[in-house]
Image (cartoon, rainbow, N blue to C red; front, side, top):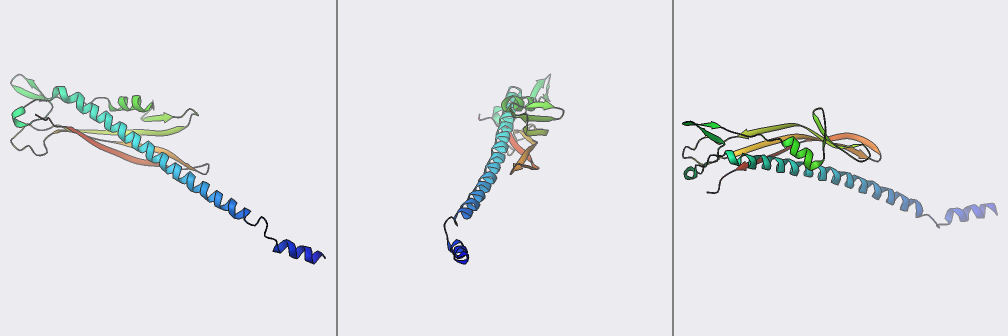
Length: 183
């Protein structure tokens, strides 16, 4: 009698799909968590890149008032007339300040950090490098002669998966903007 009960219990298939359903659900949750973390990293890095680009474009626009307008040469260098000569006049602007305002960053030391409402660091940026290339005086060859700003910044975003903190994503965000007069 007991052997028949044991045999029926082993042969009975009721509820055998439950462990498989749990395993599939857990796998889907892990995949979703990985994809959402990846998307978070992409959104943050794209937002920082766009903000850096806007700050650099704003700085280029602020230099417009110092651009010597040699319309005949199609010239776009940042120079001011001084006596009988021209002197280079370039405004570096305050790119960090523009980024802090746009992204809501707090400065602590060399880092500019975005702090969440829970007090956790969402991301931080530092090591801004701005290189302004002033166009030389026009010599007839107009190719590649324009006022240009190349910039880069280091972005660090904490990465977590499954409740564990992984090594931070650290990338160098670069962009470039320039000014070329139309007329």
